[in-house]
Structure formats: structure tokens, C-alpha cells
Length: 430
Image (cartoon, rainbow, N blue to C red; front, side, top):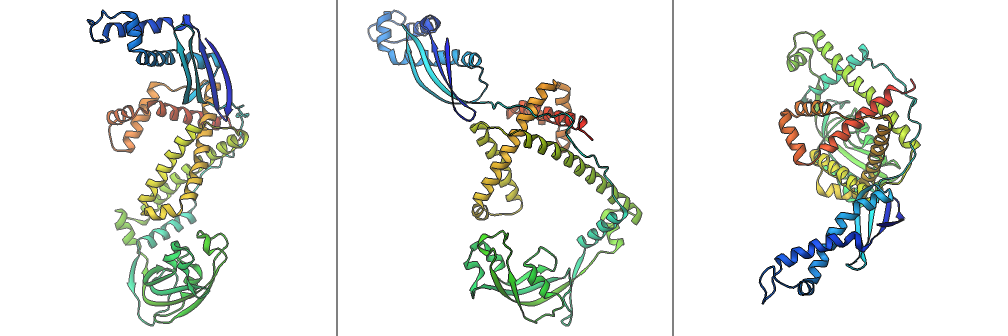
């Protein structure tokens, strides 16, 4: 067998394969025997049709089956001979076969990327000790008091204050035109009647919220607004608007008393709540610190190793990322129309994320090979038990689901990558 290769794109290789007649004769003869045994020709008993008649009557079917068998027989040895690590078969072309000359065919494949590993030992990583101060615990308790707050309707003469819940009628104009005429997605901030908003940063147009502080029910305000140049709605960037706002009802926030908090958490003393809060905050701080260290390693590797990726794997990874984005969007209550409005930005972000994830996967895989990092069956069992506990299921059900979806190799790769990342952190320059 002879194999010639051509690089026809990033991580894309064309292989021209030629096998001589003596390499293909056995497969041809075996296929011909099957047709001679099973072929049906009028006037002849099964198995008694002359060879030449079988070859003539079933020529196209015989050639098709021989070509299929020969491709299956030769494509893997051809890849090995050419030293090409295929990740996806893109095309098969120019298949020619005859018993006298053998077979030739061309196949185009996506191949694994070739790249040099950066120096991955002693990556500079700072290791901070996670801590939680008493002041941070106090702030968290204040947030809890606000989270469990109740709202009570205020008296008519009450002046609006930060944290209040206010029902407003409002209209916003740009050049004397309603804001939503510039962009349909701006309708929620263009006009509203009986619109409830809390006087807190980020809840609405900030200048409008600021103008409501100190105002009483029924007092109409005219507020000038200049949208920032980085506003999420492109059509509003840098535009000047005038809002007319009238508060109709006000509900004041009554933060929860300590006794109410303790009842919510089924605790007896504030010290117990502080201890529980501190513990949770420390756990979150530990997780955040661990994630920061991993992010440092990831950014170092990605910055030091830029390389092309197989198109087919990038496409699969993008689809996986988009599925996650769409599921999360639906969970947050976003509509199909809202997703479609941001389609280009979502796809661009998903593409960047997919390429980063795929490139990191290749880097960690190569480092694992260099360091001899492997995954044992016991480690797989332990991971499945962890997944089962997190999903309130049984290890048997989780394993069956993984095997049904043919994702056991993916799970092993994930465990290997986790071990590789930990080895990089253990060897980091502290």
C-alpha cells in the first residue's frame, strides 16, 4: 500500500491511498463467492450460476461491496502509515477499483493539531489563604435581613428613600420620539404604567432612580439621561433622553428582625447564625480561591500555546456551548425572541468559549501523556459516586446513563484533566 498526503487546511489532511491488485484480490474473491452462492439469475439454480454471468449481472453491486470492504480494510493502516491522527472523516472521493489494478481512493480527514507544549512546570501562581472577616459576616447578615424584608405601603406624605419599592408611570423620549422607536428591545425602558421598581442600583435607568429619592407620591419629575457609550442596546449608545416620571404608590422596606432571621434558619441564637454564615462564606471563599488558581494556570497555558483546531470538533463544541447557553437562558425566563435579538453576540461568545475549552483540553491531554497521568477504574467509580450523590441518584443509575450515552471515555478524560490540573498546581511556582 502506498499513501501520499497533502495538507489542505488547518488540521485538515488529504490522503491518496493506492493498494495493488495482490493486496485486494482476497477481498474481491470473497465478495464474488458470496454473490455466486446467493445470486439469483433466471434459468439457473442458486449456487450454479457461472462465474462470468454473476460478474456481469451483479457488476455494480459487487464493485460497491468490494470498495466498501477495501476502504474499511485500508483506511486505518493508511492513517497509521502516514502518521495522521484522525478526529473526523470529512470526505471519501475518487474511489477506483478493478481486480487487475487494485484500488485507489482519496479521503479527507480532520486531524489532531500539532503544537509544542509550553514550559508547564513551575507556572507562577499566587496562593492566598481564604479568610472571612467579622465585618464581612456583618455585611452578609445585613444582606440576609434585606432579603427577608417585608414591604409596607407608605403614607402619602412619605418621601421616597433608597430601598423602597415604587410604582411609577413613565415615558422616555429621544429627540421627541419614544425610545422604543430606536430599538424594539428598548421597550421595557421606554414607557410604562404602574411599573414597580426598587430604588437600588442596577434596577432601572439610574438617573431616574436617583431623581425619585426624596420625592412624594404624585410629584412628577422630568429627568435628563445620557445613555453610556457601552450601553447593552447599541441604538441607545451615547443618546440623550428625557424621562417624565410620576410615582403612584410607595412601599417601604422593613428589614427582617433578628428573631425573624433565626426563625427562617431554624436557629436559636444570633451567634449560631453568625457561625453558620461564616462557615458558608469560608466555603465559598475556598472555592473562589481554588478557581482563581486554576484560572491562572489556564490563562498561562492558553497564552503560551496558540494553535489551529479541527473544524469538526470546533463545530461540535460550539453546539454544546450553545445548548448550555440556551438552557440557562430558558431557566432565567428569556424568550426565543430575546435570544434571536442577541443571536450574533451569543454565537460569537460561544465560539470563543468553545475554542478555549477545546484548546485547553488538548493541552491538558498532552501534558497528561508527558507526565504519565492515567485514570484507574477505582477513580472512575469514585467520580460516579460523587455524581450520584450530587444528583440524588444511585451510582448504578448514573453509570447506566453514562454508558447508554456512550460517554464513559468523556468521563475518563474529564477525570484525567482534573488530575492534570491538580498536578500543575502542585508543581506551580508559589
